[in-house]
Length: 93
Image (tube, rainbow, N blue to C red; front, side):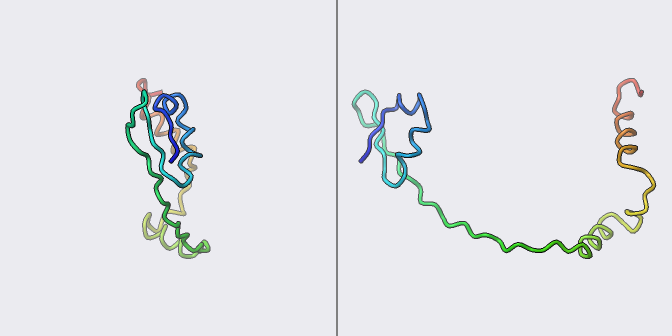
């Protein structure tokens, strides 16, 4: 079993990375055993299948969420943000 001192861990916590590669590590302080760190077995990550973006479905969702006039706005995003900034301004500038 590998051992490491608590002072070494405080000085550089990354020294544990290679030590915990597969076996437990005993933590010591002033020659006394404080405890044991056991590496956690990683669970395999299950990747979700990639779903191709469907513009028609997105448009239908957007219209359902924001209403039929969502794409008909004549105001630009910049104009809307300028208006919001003026409303938040303490002087109303």
